[in-house]
Each structure stands twice: as structure tokens, then as C-alpha cells.
Length: 316
Picture 1 (tube, one colour):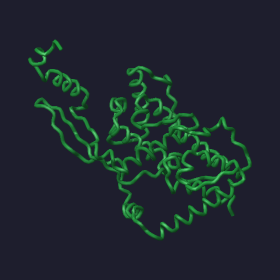
Picture 2 (cartoon, helix red, strand yellow):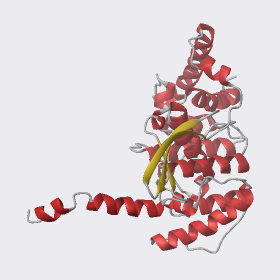
Picture 3 (cartoon, one colour):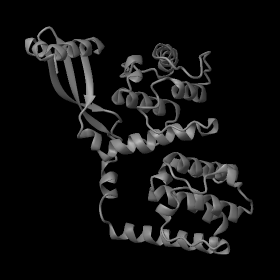
């Protein structure tokens, strides 16, 4: 390589340029980043991957919008615009697909301006530039505020906190500090959360009995079509058997074109389960506080609630 002399002349030249460029992006000289260890927190994962992602997809399923990542899929304003229309009835005159960065920022500015009016937050922890840069912390704060304002009945995990590194730029360089940031408030149900993780023999026995009752109910119903189920959580997570069960119990045929018979992606599984929950709602069988993501992620309680709604109608 012929540029060795230039590199020796100023070995930190590129680093200085990068630091200068990064400094220009900090608001008031500050930037926050979630520490890697906090990203492994099961409560944060539940908030992000199950509750918030499930809430978005459940809210927009009628529009056939499927979001796979809260930080990756909201940056251009499209999903936020649809959520604004869904919950606030605000339909802005904006291009549906903003393809350039400048168009995306303009769209985000308009959408966030309307959202901020309705969220009525004293100290907003998000802004256009952060959402557009796919900043996870800002995006989570925004979504939590939206759920709390528009659908307070949705149960958010209690007391979710993350450790964040705060970088501050000054004339003397970059200083860092570690702080705790609260994403959801403490509802005071820590005792319940602890009990959920303990090995209570009676609770385990009751759960086993309920699961066995539901398993017997499902297998009795599906015997006519030659299907046998052994694991409720796993075998129902793709929505296929659930759709077939609904059709068998209610006496109607669900066209194969309406769902994926062999789903091979999270999107396909989510589509199938969302369709099943929609059919249950049309039949007047309300499954409280269960979202499609709960079943797809093999949440035991969510799956049992769905099956129990059918069992109450047909299993007696």
C-alpha cells in the first residue's frame, strides 16, 4: 500500500474526523445508548418483542401491515402514521412511501407533531432525528407513551429499566456517564412477578390439569380429520392447527388462500394467529388481553386463554 507515509504523519486523523462528525449529531452535546447487558434483560425483551411488537401488529392487521422490528421498521414514519390514524383519527396528507431521507424526516416531523399534541408529555424522550436514526431507546419511550395513552388496558411489563451510557461532548473531549432510565412504571406487583418465577407445586398442578383438559378437548375435536396434538404451546404457535380447530368446531371451511398451511417465517405465523383471533372476535368469543404475538411466542397462558374460549362454547 502506497499511503504509509500519510498514515504515519497523523495516525488519528480519521478518528478525529469521525469524532467531529459524531459530535454534530448529539442533541445539546449529548447522546444516550443502552448498555449491551441491559439488552439481554428478559423484561426488556418481553416489552419490545412481545407487547409492543404485538400491539402494533394487532392494531394494524386490518391494513395488512406487519412489523418485525420496533427499531428497524418505524424510522420512515409509515407505521407511526397508520397508528396515528388508527387511534387518533388523524389522516395527514403525506406520501405513503417516503423513499428519501429528507422525505422520511418531513413525514416524521408531521406525524410526531400530531402525536405529541395527543400524548401530552411534559418531557418527551424522543425526537425526529432519533426515531429516523433507529434509536431503540427513543423508539421504546415513544411506543410506551402511545400504548399508555391510546390503549391503557394493554398490560405493559412493570418496572422495566435499562442502564444507558450518556456521552457528552465538550471542548475538552467526550465524557461518559452511566444512568438508569425507566421505560415503564412500577405497578407494585413485584411480589406477583416473583411468585410467577417460583416453583409452586399447586400452581404447576393446576396448569398441568388445565393443559391436559385442553389437550383432550383439541384431540377429541380433531380426531375426525386425523390430527393428534401433543404439545399445545409449540404446535399452536404457527396458527395452523388453531385455524383448523376453529373451522372444525364452527362447521365452516377456511380457504387455504387465506392462511399459510406451512408457515416458514415469523410473519407467516403471525398472520395465521392474527386471522384466528379475528375469527374468534367475529364469532363473539373475546379473548381478553391476548395478542397474536403471545401465541406465536409460545406463551402458555395466552394459548390456554384462546383454547378455553373455544372450550367454553363447545366443550361443555
